[in-house]
Length: 369
Ligand SMILES: *[C@@H]1O[C@H](CO)[C@@H](O)[C@H](O)[C@H]1NC(C)=O
Ligand SMILES: *[C@@H]1O[C@H](CO)[C@@H](O)[C@H](O)[C@H]1NC(C)=O
Ligand SMILES: *[C@@H]1O[C@H](CO)[C@@H](O)[C@H](O)[C@H]1NC(C)=O
Image (tube, rainbow, N blue to C red; front, side, top):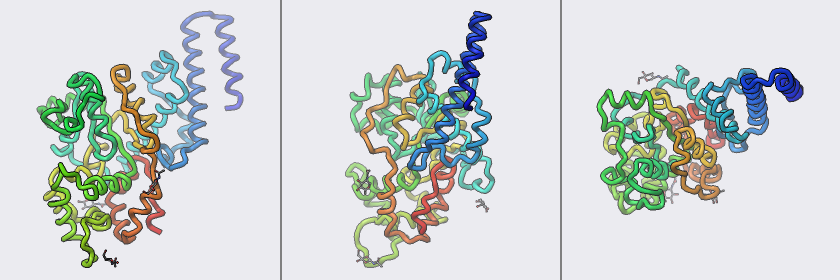
């Protein structure tokens, strides 16, 4: 590593002095690029991010240093556009995520938690942009409204994101966003095989807190069924404290989610469960070969990366992300789980373990102590 820059210079001079042939120069460029990649990999390894996300849990980290290989197209892209160090780091972070996912999908001990049937439920979650050959799997509570707006603009339904009325985004009649399930079997396969596919995840427990707050605490007036139909059913079956008379409490919700027999109620609740079933059940990450998996915690880097990889970065930009909203908030997680029995938290983790492991989120040990 230490002698690398010297070697680079020596070879560069040799080439330029003696040969002056373009193709050799190009080869040298590739080599320099390779060195930059090695260096940048080294930097990512040394300065791991503080809040435990991204590549931290990836097991083959150190061996990866010795054998970094960028796909040919990536290198061409890099030489063509002279990728900045940030952009190169994004490429490597994404490659690590996909490698981790592939490894975890093969892990037999996680089998039941990582695989799912490619059912209509999954195909219903995936939105299609034919014009730019993009598939986006919706994972509620992870900033999906903004991505739907991006796709609506790309589909030509609206000239800009700012001009899309809020009530239109989730209205299937008006948003002009077809779901993958609306196509024939062969049309579905064609798109799955050739389109750019992505989705976004965040810490699984933070997502559940966000779903609980959104659907049961704020009780949105235009979605009365959460308060009037779903909450009473969960309370009836899972409330322990019979003197508690308030609406659905987080501990009731956790007990329902962690129940190995939760499927009975899920069937009753219909598609509303999309707000709290696992990412595995929503997007089938081990069955579909996704190109990019964005993390809400690093959305500031991931959103531009996704636009670029999808080839739409010159057509549309992701709406401005308010500062601080994407950060993992441990205090909040501790606060919500403080009233929940440890046994129930462990059961919840058992159900969501696949989501933690597949996407590199650390087990929240502080909740089990
Ligand atoms: C996986 O699920 C099957 C059927 O649902 C069950 O028989 C098996 O015991 C489960 N395996 C593990 C490791 O949980
Ligand atoms: C049960 O709920 C009531 C009302 O909120 C509360 O005052 C009481 O402390 C709770 N009991 C337990 C054991 O949590
Ligand atoms: C984290 O959550 C707590 C409790 O909900 C809140 O008071 C605090 O402001 C949050 N911290 C950040 C950095 O957002």
